[in-house]
Image 1 (cartoon, rainbow, N blue to C red):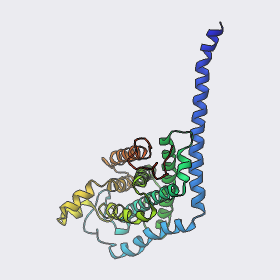
Image 2: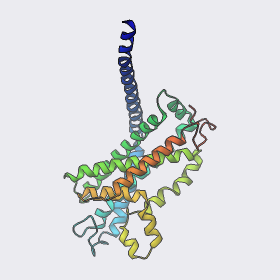
Image 3: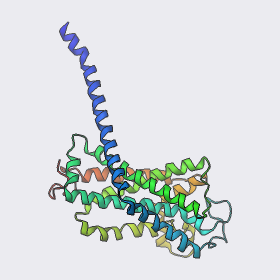
Length: 293
């Protein structure tokens, strides 16, 4: 009878252990997200800089090209649009891109200061810890992007925010934020020192942004004869993140854009987890004292 009782209790014990493990994982997720939010709340300059950069593009750059698309109707729009309306999804993407890369800088800084070692040696799966860090980055990116959209509307940019399509646009915003945050996570594997950050970012941020549909539609590139630029823009993941937001905002089918964004998110996250694995990673983090388990 005793043996049967013990065997009957084994599933119950395992279920309780699983619940405790899930509780610890969610607690770690909450702690990491709240830490990033608290740190961001003390960095008012970070929010200001995140808003000033795209607002300058919207107020100054877009002003000179306001009617540049008055000669054609561009998908997903049903009528002629001023340039400031077209450029807003691209500037939202700019906010997501810069914050994702800034999270990479924060990871490098934490690794040099030893904080990353403490995080990655927590008694939880390393992929879950990195995913928690990614969620915190994406949340900050989305909040900054929404703040920019609100300011853009206040200064007179016409956007269809009060519709059901806006919910799809918010989903696209979250998908883009997660993908670019995962890219920043992956880049932090390769960037060994803070001194190398600026140079690396110049080869990531500006090519991704300018070789995309953030500033001009693909057909403009093709029409101008810039074939290689057109092809690079087509295969740029950032292009698909921007187009997903753009088409979703107007209730149109974004095509393959969500699949490209989510696929790149998965690839970037898996490679980042691989890179932060001290046994197999290609980042050499343990040798530098940043990713020891």
